[in-house]
Length: 307
Image (tube, rainbow, N blue to C red; front, side):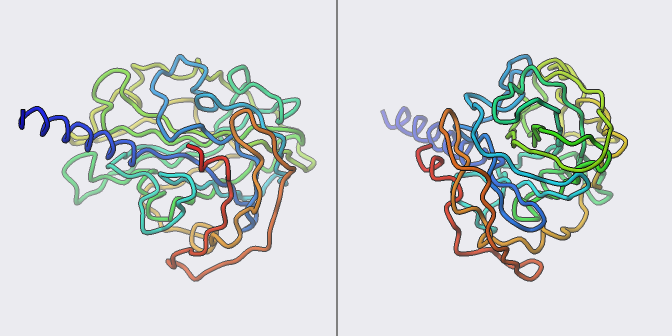
């Protein structure tokens, strides 16, 4: 009896630890201001079936009413945390040794407040993937995009290409956790789609890929053992668009990654799931010195409290 109880307790504790290590991209920053236009995931659990429609904008999400206006060429900042309403830098943005790449895509759509991400054409605008650590002995010890998220309090800067045509877009932020990816179907994808209206005078309309469609469970960037020594890593999906940007894994936090504070988070939400919400809300930015911890969190997503 004691053995059974102990086994059950260990299993429950392990399950809770795993859930706590899961995460979602929740907030968006534009020029240092908090903005609200996320199709907030219904839970912090990952998507693991790359053939599912959920690989586009996560499970159970649907369009919201808010759109964030952003000029082409602007750097936005996506923000990830393990739990809704917890934006403390004392907690890892994505814990549990969930190492892997961070990539961001965009898709041109007729109306970001109604578009179906699973039928859109996605082009990659950003990647922070992997770099070897000369002092490490395996992939776990190497530099990864998710480690950069943790180092920068869940924040990652992403430049909107300056040459893309104006109009509505979905922006899709994705983190891929590879801690269990040595077995087929065990890579863990965490993604959120944001609804944008891009302004500017660009004319480029980059070719894209389908999600689902661009990823296969057998891709070397998805089926990989990071617990062994690694000499190379190729992230899944297409190459980054020519006017996009990349970041070297292990680099220092910069700009909003160092200075954006929770005090400038939106005070209202564009909603999540099937809910509706107000138009984009921007509030006065508050910044802190590099490396300081944001405090005084404003509830940016009241719906998230129901998760």
